[in-house]
Image 1 (cartoon, helix red, strand yellow):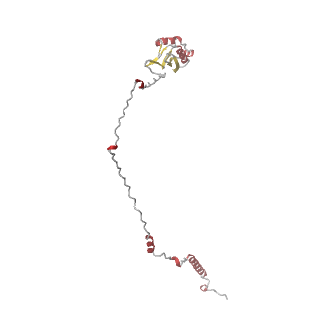
Image 2 (cartoon, one colour):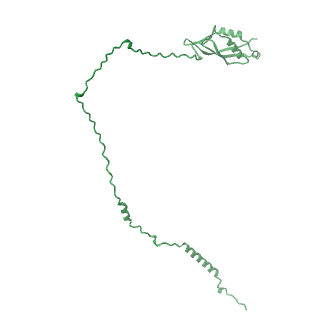
Image 3 (cartoon, helix red, strand yellow):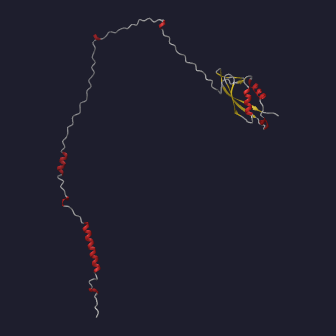
Length: 224
């Protein structure tokens, strides 16, 4: 004969439920124990009577300040009158000295030194330099003495060479350069013939000879 168990009479049937409830209660008690706050009995401290403290603060002895000094009064200046007896009589000073001609001091005013005119080079003057005999004689001299460069003649080069010359106050040629040339040896030939001409009338400014710079054109033209 086998024994049969009644499932409704089994005491271990609800053991998981009881275990879970017990575990929850244990956790709740542990959390409550850790979070429980304790207060001392002396948390309330008697600070005393606030009115008494306020009275002690207000009872400050006042210090008396000395009054400011009175402003200084200026004493009026007293002008004492001098009696007429003490006034000194006017004294007349007479200078009786004879002045002779020897004692006269001559005052000489030094005359301003005349400014020496520096011989500056002018480009414009009242009278410009001119060749002695006129420009006709000068150009005839140029045509007679010029040697047409073979290279320029072979290349049929013609044109005008402009020279920049400087004539000093003595009527002498002091400098000559090519201001505008045509090349092919014509520029050098124009300078060579220009230096052969030595007779110039100096230019003048305010009636005085001056050094003047000017331009002279020389034309190169050949005929077969």
